[in-house]
Length: 258
Ligand code: G
Ligand code: G
Ligand code: G
Ligand code: MN
Ligand code: NA
Image (tube, rainbow, N blue to C red):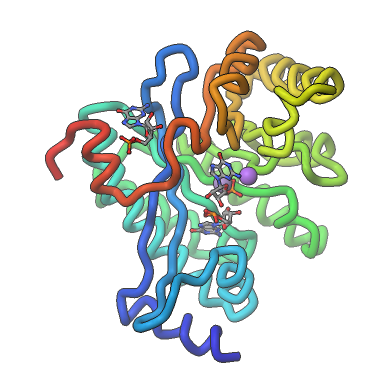
């Protein structure tokens, strides 16, 4: 297709860019980490949404090279944020990347080259990435994640609570962080919120009892943030704090000289 052809040239034409969304400590408002989100603006065109081009990148295999570019940029940016402020960076990865046999070595090599400690990088995975995989592929993905985790790289399970079998995947996948999907956040402050609050509270307690840390996504209002803080949620992400912004804006927020 036309988009696939365009995407094939996106790297060489420097049409890709990363934006970063802060993850804040609800108690203090301090930025604790950032999530890297990929943007593609074809030359002379308007931006293409990631939910449109990421699936194309996965189908065409372009996600391997694009994913390495994302990791490279994210580590280069994270280095100046981590050194002075202890900020860690989260990068979304696709199942296709994790099944690539050189993935682990590539990640460890670029952390080394950018002088970033392994714990400064979080890889965000989703349970949906396991839906179309065979049992052997799933075993391979678990092995790769466990290997990186043994080196100190953190693994986050993204969009938690949206799949058919979130709890089963939580038992299967080696993870450190749960990211509660924003579909749980929106109804927290609606009139009939009792059931939603019970679900969110239960996930927070489950996460804590498994020794995981939790990030709540999609916080858009002060009221939502207050409810979450009362429930003991430490970390949150959403438009209330900041939309995804270019790296120079993160530098401004942290008052770092690039
Ligand atoms: O801002 P938002 O529209 O950025 O992101 C839409 C979706 O695209 C999200 O589900 C996000 O996980 C995914 N996404 C964004 N950047 C990347 C990336 O670099 N790699 C992968 N695999 N997915 C990404
Ligand atoms: O990787 P993930 O699917 O979690 O990607 C995060 C997505 O959520 C991105 O598309 C990002 O732009 C979007 N997002 C971030 N904060 C908010 C928010 O407060 N509200 C809504 N509706 N979307 C958000
Ligand atoms: O400065 P501006 O209004 O563009 O910021 C947009 C959002 O980013 C606001 O909601 C603001 O709270 C958040 N923001 C700006 N600077 C900081 C900062 O230093 N720390 C945190 N946690 N949030 C910030
Ligand atoms: Mn994510
Ligand atoms: Na999500």
